[in-house]
Image (cartoon, rainbow, N blue to C red):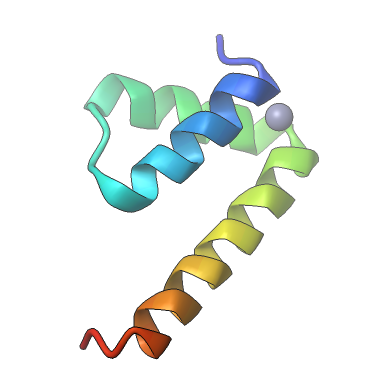
Length: 58
Ligand SMILES: [Zn+2]
């Protein structure tokens, strides 16, 4: 079972590299139960997409 610290670490890691199936499942499970990490996930996803846009990729 992941704690919030592990989860946020994995979420940022996920932006750069793909995680193993096991880690993705653990991550999803934690996100289902933890609204704090869900919010963090939304933010990091938004920032990541914005960065891609501004850096001129795709
Ligand atoms: Zn959490």
